[in-house]
Image 1 (cartoon, rainbow, N blue to C red):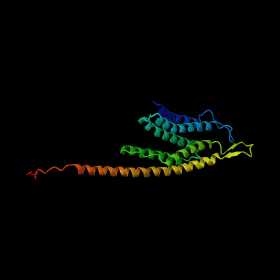
Image 2 (cartoon, rainbow, N blue to C red):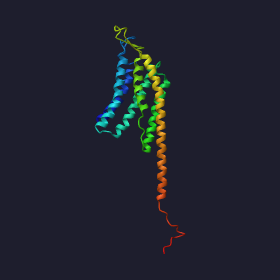
Image 3 (cartoon, rainbow, N blue to C red):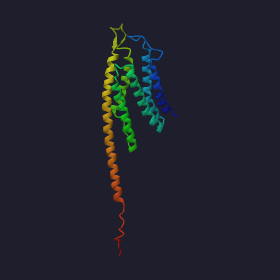
Image 4 (cartoon, rainbow, N blue to C red):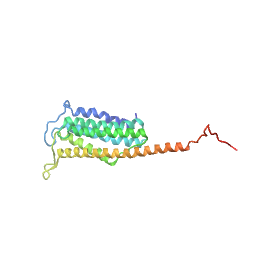
Length: 233
């Protein structure tokens, strides 16, 4: 297995690790309520998710740089992305339902299935649907929303440098709620954008197919009828 595929597999391997860390069975559960006391469970889970999300860019970079774009990599990469995102939101529904209600997880996971289905049909028809800028924005907001929702399980805010002009407050809960709902809106817009792009390309593909059929029929030579054989001379 080459390096890019190994990086992709590490992202898949991070999924059960993330689920275990966010489960009640995880041994390092913090007991702090404010500031940065305790919270080992949330910090470790956030770092694991961020590391897994970073591998999403690394595998593609190394695949292009080393010329190791393979069929397995093209299959595993989007699969790993969708498994990671789906697993994170399913766990967050149970872990922090104040921030991630079940209907948001349904919307997010439904969007991933929709895009996967459209890409599969597009591949069958012989064309691809490129990732749009909206889709890339959705990915960034998704990472922020998951990390913030994990941290908001323990903290409503962080107070940094309290002795420096009263400190600097980071509103973790506010960031989490804003990111989750903004991510949901962007996910819906992105799904519509993918569907419109798919519809346009499938329309063009069908038109090209019809033109090929018409041209092939016109190019076919006409055979003389046996009842009226052609006469020469």
